[in-house]
Length: 119
Image 1 (cartoon, rainbow, N blue to C red):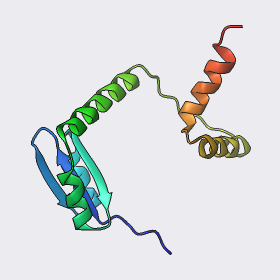
Image 2: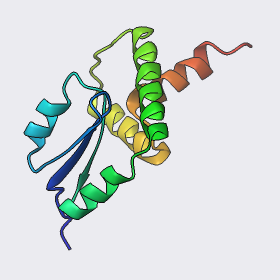
Image 3: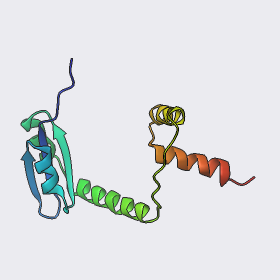
C-alpha cells in the first residue's frame, strides 16, 4: 500500500495562542516563518484539530526551550561543506541508517573518539 501523503498541516502559533489548519505546505511555511510555533502534518482535518486541542502550556514551554538550546548549539558550531568519494559516502549513509544519526553527529563522534580522547 502506498504511503498516504499528509494533506492537513496543524500550526499552533505560541505567542498569538492561535491555531491554524492549512492544506498547503508552502502556505504553512509562510505562516510559520518568524513565529515560535508547533506544527505537525496529518492525513485528516479531524486528526489535525485533535492534535491542536491537546497542546498544553507545558508543550509550548518545552518547545521554546528546545529551540533556544538548538540556537545556542548552532552558534557554537562552524559549518563545513565536504565532498566524499562515493564509496566513502555510501559507508557514511549506511552508518547514518544503522545508528539513526545524521552525518554531522557521526563525524563528530569519530573525531572526539579518535582524535580528542585522552591516551
